[in-house]
Image (cartoon, rainbow, N blue to C red; front, side, top):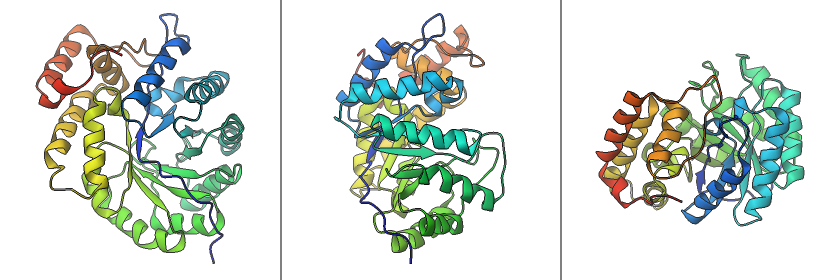
Length: 309
């Protein structure tokens, strides 16, 4: 029999804030506090930070810990905070996990190890050691395109449920229907309350399989659109969600090529300057920025979104 699990919190609509940097490329905590307030005021049910959209891989260990402590103190219990603890080494990730719990995080999330492409048995041990370093809920982040093709499968998740009482769910960016169906056929039977969260704003397909939450980096640009999509999917109004999903897909396509640079540029175009990027990321050039602004202007739903802070 699987180990009993703690009652998971419902993560719901998860905003993933970017990380503002000054011109000197230092973390801008003043602006970060402003950004946290924006997300709380504009529909975030949970915050996850610092995710890849928050340039987590460009943060030094001390900066990352300071950012987490600052964010949890600033949120002050108003929303749950999921802390991202992915790292190259298992011990490093486990140490970040312990720090997150000590700082007051509500949950942690971790991907497969950076750089390495370990086989399933090693991935299982990695997640077990990271998850067992804490007592708070632990989510696995399945992003095979971001992680050199390392993928989860339903059997690995089943084994992790058997070994890890606080394994609470999967944040899925794979858009792999077969994996999600197998996962949500097996996992909730062994762990009632097990959660599948859409890892992108393409939530309709995931919701049809059983996703109950969504990670939304694009909520920094269009929080109303993100919330509308989430609520429709949460209530299983999937046909009604089609137009909203198409608008969100257009926004995702507009920022996809430039990644975090386009995300920050689009937030700036909406009146929310989120500071500089850290190398090796480069800001959009003038032509790319104007193209992005034109694509944003063509998305009708953005007319209803908040401008400025």
